[in-house]
Image 1: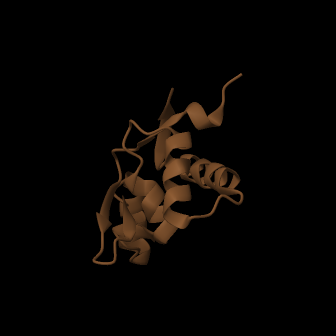
Image 2: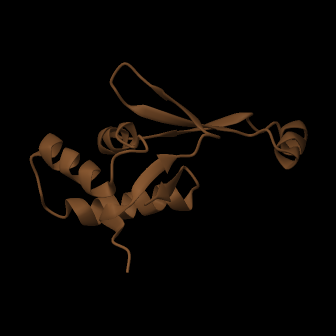
Length: 108
């Protein structure tokens, strides 16, 4: 049986991201597929979309480096927030959301 805390998240290289002056991250989703281009012409949809992360999400994202395990990222959150209440449960849900949206994959 695999323990989620042992997994190492890796950012999907097809997405770029930027950090603003406040240290918050925005993930940029380019809409450049065939259907995307049709929708842009027909409905004037944007060529890119951004997903803006909050302070905690940005801290998690910055620590996804292909080396840190989920457990290590959780420990970093505990240090930063000075709070241990449900950190790993919340982190697991957040990591699952990033994975479900194809922003990250895992290596073990």
